[in-house]
Amino acid sequence: MRKSMMMEFPLEEYQARLDKLIAGMQRYGMDAILLSSKENTRYFSGLQSIVWDSKIAVPGFLIVTADGQMTIVSSTSNQPAVKVTAVLDDDCLLAYSRTNEAGFPDTFPKAVVYALEKFGVKNGRLGMEIGTGFRVQMSDADRNAIMGMIPDAKIVDAAPLLWEIRRIKSPLEVEAIRRSCAINVAAYKKGFESIVCGKTTEEELYRIMAAECYLQGAEAMLPLGIRCGQERYSQGNCPPSKRVIGLKEGEMMLIDGGPCYMGYYSDIIRQAVSGKPSARQQEIYDIAVEGNNLGLSLIRPGVPVREVCKTVDDFFASKGMDAYNRCKGWMGHGLGLDVHELPTISMDCDAILEPGMVMALEPELFNAELGVFGIEQNFVVTETGYELLTPAPQELIRLPM
Image (cartoon, one colour):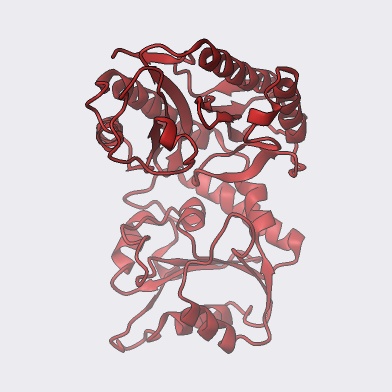
């Protein structure tokens, strides 16, 4: 390994990640692991590229063996970006060339298989990103070509090992997420202050907030979920529309999502109402926020995530909100290089909270006529409890009509 021009973390950080990966492969009985996703290749090697969203290009394909050999397979045209971002030594890199340059395999599948054969793992147990939370980032044709050339290999799911490593954030990762959250809080403040009821649209608000995030140092921005008004209440995870905010008194609105900084996401929800909420709207909102704070009060090492979920569900039921509890049984997720990571805060997850886990808690109450109610908080589990990473105001913001 060596320092690269655009290296984001110290070499020691990458070495520690790779050491965990190699030890894990040995423990899981894998001979090698094949990583194609943007998040995993960046995490273990530092690789960055502007063409990850391409459905044609393969920015880089990371192969690591249980005895510590490694390479990144990429096209000759992508090799310069690999060399200035990834921490692997140049002589570990493998290029392929469609122009039949001497000494290079001429296709991506041939290059991958060449590396496996060189490392002596062509017929071994090979871990791939085929489990929950991951996608193999290559065309079906390339995948079939590779599998056809390694018929004796045993493909196994690497997801449990990868989440075992990535679910615990290092202090440097936590600092990156802390910065992402600070950018997010500033953008939410800017956004709410910019709304003019009866004039500002959801799309315009998104552009205002995205611009603020980029000015604050974000590298990317989620397509925020911004929804206002009765016809929008039920449309969860919907991008912003041309709908004007605050057309009449008592319209609930929410903003959901956030920016990415150094690859790490923040994801929060805050809410506002045009003019004055009804007494019932305020009551439901206050219960939703109280439920979130109750959940946070349980966060500490050793607590099962199920306990957090059940406690909040039971609280909502005790307040007569069971029928409104749209997230019953599931109310949060891990956070990191993906906006949704494992473990989840849910009744079907058996994870135990550990120091270094970064998560988002987002219990939600919903009534089709009155609105969506709740906030989303990001936190990191500490040795004694938790640190709140998103200290934006919790109050229901009243937008002047």
